[in-house]
Image (cartoon, rainbow, N blue to C red):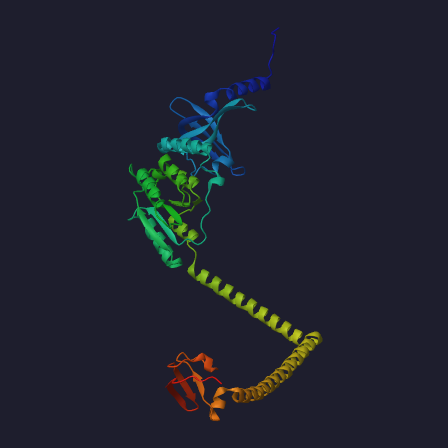
Length: 402
């Protein structure tokens, strides 16, 4: 009797675990031809056989993966599949569980796409936290695309229709071929050296994966990620997805859609401004009416009316005081005028000029000093005799004291 007897379930479980632990079968690429393809309508899962000249393996692609494949396989189609080899334990069949499926002719490109996408995702280049906000009202937009392509014409037409006041700056670049990645990256860097550019639109019209491949390169991806100006990716048609779409701050399904998204309608802005103007004027009128009503209420208030009466009384008191001041000043001036006249007459009586008018003379020396006594004189001194109507120069002949 053997030491260990396995059940079928146990054997299948062991085999499945062995397959899971086999690293090269856990995430591998397999190429072959599709046969026995079945789209299971209720579930949406795809069931088929992948075969080559010598062998075949059953494969399944669940609906959640199938909807993002971008195409539907057909019998006889050569494909490249990324997936894992596992055992379907219920019936013991080894199956390929497909995660990604690509047409075989483009398999190398798709594989490169997936590898670059995964690497950049691990670096965080697709993180929402790194997305720069798109300006709501851009005034200057740089468009990086082929100057002769339909994409540029579409963008210009949409911009002219929506808002001709928005300035578009075209930075020409190749958009396919070997030189395209370098030119696109250089154009993005050049745009970042220009002043007052609010937004970049980078893209081209639709095409095959080979024609769009410049936008799946690491050089372009890193140029977009390094841009200080927000970047809108507008590559191909709505079903086309590129690395540039994932790195950009905003993905537009087409170039014309990019212009529709980022360029605001001038008519809408004018209508919005008119609405704001009307609302502002309405609010101002309401404030004025409210203040006018408050003034009327205050003017009719008893307390304010009493204060007005007091103000009028104060004005009347000021008028009375002003009149009294005027009368007082007039009387003061008249009284002072009489006093001045009296003093003037008294001064006239005391004035030596008045004495001279009565026939007296005034003797002075040549310097104008008054001679009060003969003791001040000597024989031969000069004198000046002052009369009421003039002066006379004299010389002393004799001095006689009494």
